[in-house]
Image (cartoon, rainbow over all chains, first blue to last red; front, side, top):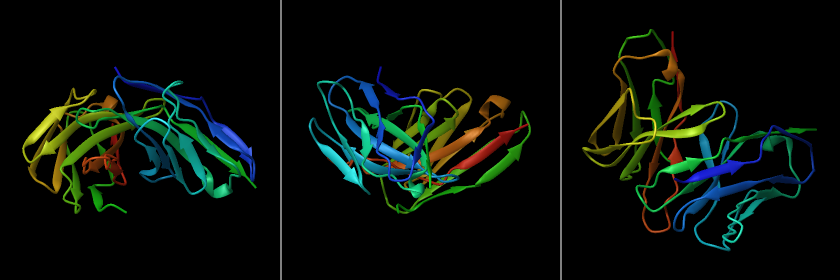
Length: 112
Length: 114
């Protein structure tokens, strides 16, 4: 079945540092790929998405590129802020009823 | 933000009691989902609905049932709550139209079963 593997956390960075959170997936067909973010005490918010190979999703300075050859969708940001502290989830959805398969989540903490 | 509300937001109950969680949307989206979030597991799908009175099981459906009598409401019922069902429950909705297949999540319900 479908699966998503994220790099293990937690990740702790200083403000303005570069961020990469690795995400690889296993799926049949051509899934859509997503990054969701969860701020403390809140629900999940869609951060960015990509629906086909080589697509780049971007939002709020975050980027991720759908790499079919390496089955990866790594999240990157050039300069993180304290306000980026949150839990980040990589996820995919296949072609059936739209079920989202999530990675286990990566906790990011950014210090001033 | 997508118009999704969940009620209650917090609930404490005892083992063996029935519990119903409600998800309400104002977006008129066809698809609705119930997930549970547990440490180390991300989110896992419990049940989903693809229309009024059309529902099916997800990967962790044992001990849960759902109903959808109106487009805007999707109910999750724990017939006899157990401590293993202590979790945070999220509802999600999706239009699933062409490339617009992302899901939008509600604020969550924190359920504690003593």
